[in-house]
Length: 247
Ligand SMILES: C[S@@+](CC[C@H](N)C(=O)[O-])C[C@H]1O[C@@H](n2cnc3c(N)ncnc32)[C@H](O)[C@@H]1O
Image (cartoon, rainbow, N blue to C red; front, side, top):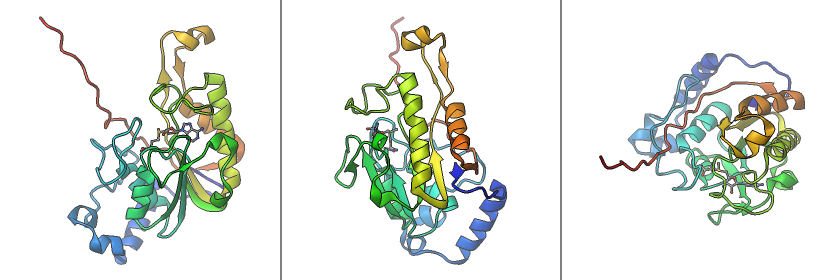
């Protein structure tokens, strides 16, 4: 997560404490109308480890690379206010859109190949659309390079079809475009995981591991962002299927 201007922010614990205090004093409409789970905000995390065993079915739908809506809820809770404008250029199944509606935030969502009608068809490699200018938070959940190659769109411009050099170039431009788009003091979040591959392009490049977290962190700093938090979001919601071999 990174902030647009050079201001230092207090520690995560302090932010959590203060925000909780402020928000709990004035329950929102959502708090009042939602079912028990949301009144109690069981999805709320108080450490920098946001681990969820499954995706809340209210946010998004089964889709390659779908994230638990609880991750977006925590992001919105800690880093935005009601009615803020959130922009998600990698909309996927619309998890961010649904979470924003749930917590009363406005949201613009895009995808190279939209999976639902409220996501606009757009290639974010071209820069952010005009209507995103001055937004409060940009939520970036791009393909983690080739981890799901062939499962997302294969259209030209797809982040998951690029080679490593092109992917890094795209990420660098994306982060710089995000800087020019978010309002001063606004927040840009990036969800990304490192990748390990055997063979193929990696062999030719003499490596088996790409540290996307490190690379992108460097792009954020070079662009002029101030880091706010690094939050661990383990992929525990992913399901792996194995065939049991016959004995
Ligand atoms: C990790 S998924 C997003 C999942 C989403 N957060 C969810 O919970 O459903 C990444 C998305 O990026 C999209 N994508 C890839 N390249 C893109 C591009 N150049 N512009 C916009 N979207 C792109 C893919 O189609 C895919 O839906």
